[in-house]
Image (cartoon, rainbow, N blue to C red; front, top):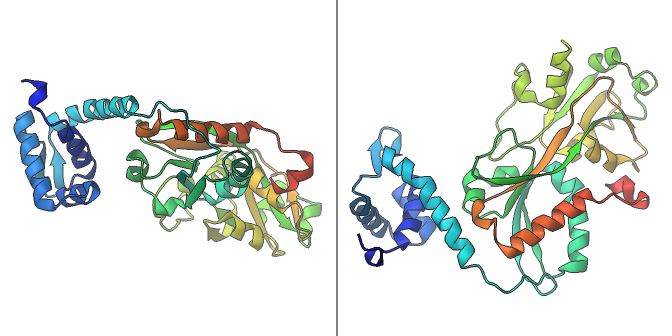
Length: 320
């Protein structure tokens, strides 16, 4: 087959079809009509001599050949993306680039203010559109609609690029009126009432089952390893809500230490180390292979990594 006779745009259509597994959604993504997308699928079937997508009870299902072709097509498109990148160096001082970043409440509170401080000095025209984990799916990041995700991830697609931003320990927040601050033992910790806070990964969250220790996360898994369990009376996905509730006399919030430090100037709260060992967590940023070689994207990734690595000056450490 003579490659000059092949419409290489078909590879783009193939990639979107295999991601969406739905003709209508693929058409909407590409900005074409549903009949036009159906015609594209027919051309793809003729090109590869295979049905590629078959309608089943679970919707459109890729054939074995389609599954085999998908990573090869994705690699080709990534290489083409790299080839057509502009050779002119990215100029942050003149850029008006908008970056869409999905960040957890924890990451947005502890990391993004420091990133913004650098941007104001080096790239004052750059705009950040901050999204929550509930706003974003794996597909949004994979297709480059969202520039990067910054969060703690239990699992992530193997195709994603990722980098650890930092490790963080844990701290406990208690009200200054909580008598446990004078006798903060493991026994007293377990007998107290606790605020649970977490939001990892992507997508819309679901309700928490207090009996499902593995889904409760790091603090409760650490307690389970020593055959202990705390009494959780409030579940939230927002760290600032947990910090506010920790001002109540009878509640304890156990949070990553960088988030806990945000309360150091709050006279109503005392920060204490946990009375048991909790393994550190990793905050990561992840991005699509489509953006791996993008110059402005690479610049922002490097800036974020530099900000995260740089020690916070003592005079602003309380707002880290």
